Amino acid sequence: MPGSKSITNRALILAALADGEVTLKGALWSEDTQIMAECLQELGFMVNMEPDPAEPCNRTLTIYGNGGAVPPRHGGAAA
Image 1 (tube, rainbow, N blue to C red):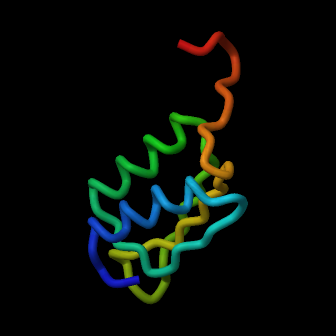
Image 2 (image 1 turned 135 degrees about the horizontal axis):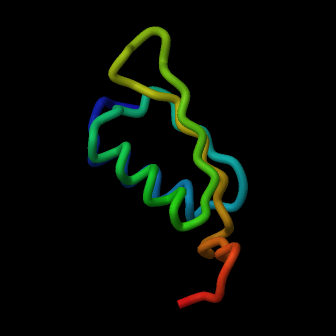
């Protein structure tokens, strides 16, 4: 991926909408993309974040999409 937080954030959303595992390599790691990944986790998506040994400003992100649905919340009733 190119080093763009806007493209990285769009790719994160598309990965969450996908069905199954999506890996984004070379994703720009900025405050905005960190917040987006954390928001997806708060919604219940599994997001793994690994450093890129070749480029400290990038990450490899693995998102486990739920086929267009937000995962069911655990531990309480839905709002």
